[in-house]
Length: 545
Image 1 (cartoon, helix red, strand yellow):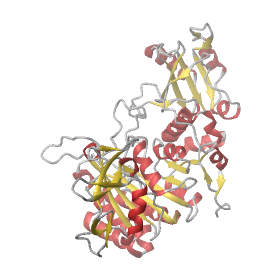
Image 2 (image 1 turned 135 degrees about the horizontal axis):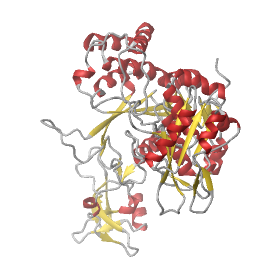
Image 3 (image 1 turned 180 degrees about the vertical axis):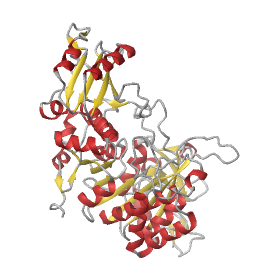
Image 4 (image 1 turned 180 degrees about the horizontal axis):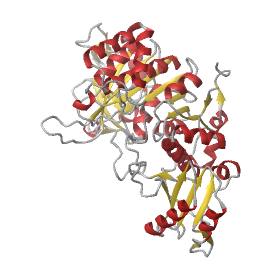
């Protein structure tokens, strides 16, 4: 069953096949992860395909030639057609390496994305020059050469210093449509100041204007020959139109006896947006919208794409939604949306971003699909992928994973930052430890030691198993944290997944606590279309097979 608005956790290939119906999506934007900073020696090194199947973890932007990639390649090739042909050519030219793995994984997903697009839909694929030339051929095979519309170049940084080559400061965005007719809303950029200075005249109302030629001399197709107010010429407009312009005070009678047209600056729409985008700066370190996600794109970039290639009420899909820029902008612009990501960290980040941007009421306007909702689901996730279980469990309490390498976390799985001394007070933290297997009193003692070492206010152990009486006694011996308001809270807190899912329990924090775990997204402007809220979980079609 497909829902909108919706966040899906999981492999986007599986989500697309199971949940997204054919010809239901109006606009797709994707920025597929790829380790573009790797050396070409690594990307093109031959691999034997026997590595364990790879999953993309948080911040690991790469694909590998392994059994999963080989299976994807085989599926595409056996399906036949242009995509099969181009993939076989890639293998002949590239060999079996990480670049071929990336193209194999993209090929099978692009075919699904083409399937879900409406006949009037558009796709924008964002990439950098490392693989753009291969992706262009792949897109030609999937969408057809005749449906290529633009190669957009986005100047993503002002300058870039690269040894012995030109600075790499631009990304590529390929724009394709599914058919010959597609949604298009022309956008315009403001004229540069040097152009505005040409409008040096002002009328009595303060409107700036300049003049333009009204004669048809030298134009193909001729004109209209007559005399207007004693001035004879070959004019661009007929006599009746000249009279209308005169009544509207749009004619400028020159000192040399000519007639020219008044063109008002305020009436000009601007310069139609071109394929070279130099006016959208990247997200700098001081930007309010910066959330710390490594591949975050500016909202202005997505706003331009969404406004141009969709209308209010249309459905926008981002199959690699990351920190949720596409989702947030689509919601602000009154579009329905679907976001997919394979990491619980990304899903948690998107949820926090939506809540910060649109308020807590936003949580009633979308659904998260694919996350565990029962203890049984949680146990299955822990057995399948302990790291993803850890990220998911941290999300239940509003914490985020530590960014150290696994195995080097020094006893810290996540942190939750908070203020309980007012907005300008000291930032304090709760240390989170997540256990998916057997737990014992030494786990509580270890957590106490980490809390003391880090100078943290609180420590929280989240587990699938129920704590033993000995563990509860160990936690009680840690005492209490006393807040500036005088309230007391257990220094070491033990929570089970059942507590969080079935009982609704949360970390015992001081009152009036201001959480600051994720960098807060700026508040979005109030929505001007209240009917959009009635689109909650609109069902696209009957449940799929």
